[in-house]
Picture 1 (cartoon, rainbow, N blue to C red):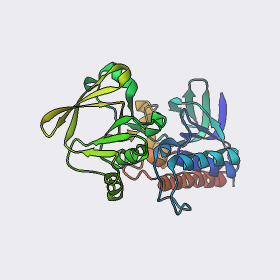
Picture 2: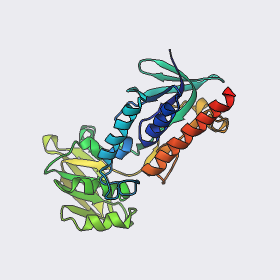
Picture 3: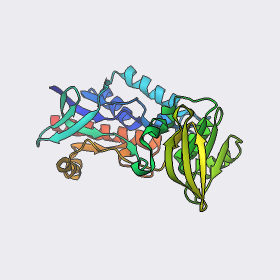
Length: 296
């Protein structure tokens, strides 16, 4: 069994910031990440509200810089997904696919998971061409892509893809929920089409040629033939590794200063990189000061 003082679940901006600060303070810390370092930041077309980048920076580039800092500081990163968490009154136990890790403090920076399309409207064979993150599309070229959603993520994904592809944003209502800035940029690009009142009824595979979407558009049935469907209909906290008993202990453990939820996993609509980084630094400093108090 592996032992450490602090374990951090997730290597997005908040988890990276916490890991860097704790390691700088000399506190034995491990960061566990089963996916790519950087989290959802890797999807961002252009980050313009993060300090020190007056001209903005691509999300993937900012994520890479954060990853470089993680390694430069010497943070221990384990490429493992946490499957279960338990608490025995003194220590946390994190179970991964390969080992169990015991720690005194736990930082949950696991981010969010996408809301999925209902199974009843998706043919099983079509799943291979449906994506929930733009980065997973692996930079397609000359493709027809439908994006389901009308929030910041949907429009940001469209802007990310519009240079080399034909993109259609499908909004099931009239109301756009994105920043006005994103809408203004999107409507200026001829490769982006926006369709309101478009409800997705059915998705089926067309084999090697892509997908066939059946839509209800303002009461009329229409079809779309696309290469890929990108879904951005909302996200929810990624806490599937917590069993019901442990989930009931969260508030008690947070109050005691043993557990911290940071970043997108607990920030609701305030999912911004700068906020997540601040969360990580604050949690790390709180843990550091607790350890100092005990050692006096």
